[in-house]
Each structure stands twice: as C-alpha cells, then as structure tokens.
Image (cartoon, rainbow, N blue to C red; front, side, top):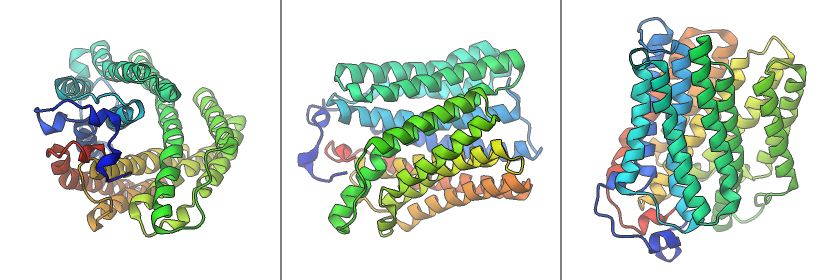
Length: 405
C-alpha cells in the first residue's frame, strides 16, 4: 500500500467527478458493508436455528441455508468488494461506481431475499435470482479485465466461474435431491483456491513492503516454481475432494498439499511481522489453509478426525479471518486512514480467531456450548466491524485517498 498522491493509479487520475452517494463511489464500500452485516445477521439467526429455538421457512434445509448464505452470500459479497476495487488498479480503467454499482449491490440483496422466500416463490425462481448476481459480477469483471488487456488476471475469473457453477449445482441438488452435497464442496474448494492464489500475492507483497520499511533483513521468498507446484497440487487435491471426498487417495493428496502450503507460508517471513498486526493477521489467516488441508486429509484416512473440523478451519478460519483482514486493510487504505490495527480492530481479529478455534474443537467434541460460543464470537466480531468500519465505508473521502490499496 502507499499513502502518496503521486502513487494514485491511472484509473483514479482519470476518474470522472462523482457526485452521488459515497456508499456507491467504489466497489469495496457497499459490498464490504453488506458482507459485514450479513455475516453477523446470518449467524445470529443460525445459532438459535441450530439449537432448535428458531425455525426459518425456506425451500432449503436449515443446514443448507446456513452453508449457502455463508458461501454465496457473505463470501460472494466479500469477493465482489475485493474484485471491483482491485480490477481498476490491475487494468488502469475507471472503477464501477454510481447506480451501476448500486444495481449490482441490489442484485446481491435480492439473492438473499429470494433464498429466504424460496418456499414461497419457488426454488427455480430463487435460484435464477440468486445465481444472477455472480453471473453479472463475472460479466462485469471480465469486461474490465479484457478491456484493460490484463490477461494474467483472467485466472481469477476462472475461479469465479467455478464458484458460480457450484451455486448452480447447489440449487440443482436442493431441487432434485432435497439437500446440497457437491455444490458445497465446489464452493469451498473454489474459495480456498482463490485465497491460495490471491493470498499468495498479497501476503508476501504486504509483508515485503512492511519489512523493507521497518524491519530490514530476511524477506519473503518471491513467487517461484515451488509456489506453482503447491498451487497445482492443491488444485488437484480439491478436484479429488469434490469427486471422491472420503477416498484414501484424496486423503493422501490433501496431506501433501497441506504440507506444501505450510512450507509456502513459512517462506513468507511472517514471524518477522509481529509488530504490525495488519500484516501479521494475514499470515495467521493463511495458516488455516494448510490446517484445513491436513485435517480434511486426516479425516479421509482416519475415522477419528471429523471432516467438519477441516471444513470449519477453512470456512471460519481461512475465509473468515482472511476476508476480515482484507476488508479492514482495504477500508483503512482507501479512505485515507492510517494503516494500523487499533485495539478494537485487533479485538475483531481475535474474536474471529477464537470463533474458528472453538468451532474446530467442537467438531471433535460435539459440544453445543462451544458451537454457541463460537457463533456468538463470530457475530460480535462482525458487529464490531460494522460499527467501526461502517461509517468509513459510508463517508466521502478525497479521490486520492481512495487510491490507497
């Protein structure tokens, strides 16, 4: 990240004067706020549903609703905010803003309403509304990347396409079989691969920048063939998991992929970033990626390890903490704030870490109390995010400040 006006990307230098609502000035604003709100609300509803104290009437089973809304609701909003903010910097083109951005955000909201009302409007109508968000986001992202001739980032669109395909499969399974299965694994796999790909760029990059300025010495190892091998094997393992999740070969692939991912993380010099929590949290978040691989691999090789332990290491840990780390950092940088984690921001990170840890332990123990505590910690984290960062997301700032990323 940079704080100098001279470092404004070309897209911001050429930007038209924008006089509309501040919330629609840049992609990160509506979608990060929506992600934070929905992450808190969806789990606040899910915990009493899980314990039998509340009933929701949708065309989905309670578990499928929970899984879908975390993956295709919360995570989809986080991805949208990231992509719509990163792509202008990748391509040098103007960012999507104003009512086109507002329409895309409303389409995401319509998906959440459609899923909740799916028992009334019908599963096919709900699916059409819900899937249209990722399809539209993909079309917008593809247009910008292709127009900007930013060919190397087309692979991000491939993963986004896989995520959208998973959503289609999810809906099809619910409609035809009454419960989702493959669609869940496709979604989780695509998100973890996206974190491996994007995280493999931003974690060592931000670490390198901070170390050069503040702690000269050992730096992250640049992207090399080892990283390519780790990504390739991780992708292969994830494909095997989608197809045959409990097979011994899948388990072996996951264990090897987990070890490679762990070595990859160790090469990024995270142990030298303890003084900067904004950088350190990225390494902590990524730690859940190899942990998830190892736990799911172990579950395929031994009945002593429940599959949900690894899945929650990924979803609550890697996804939850990485998305929060990116949303807080991007919001601070793009709104002209100091790039430092205040005690409240550190508390947000800690709450999500505790939530992920407790949910992994609960997978082994079956403790309802731990699941409830994990859920409450998650809700508290995202409620604090909305309270602390919501005003920044809705407040207008100079164009040069929004160029900081």
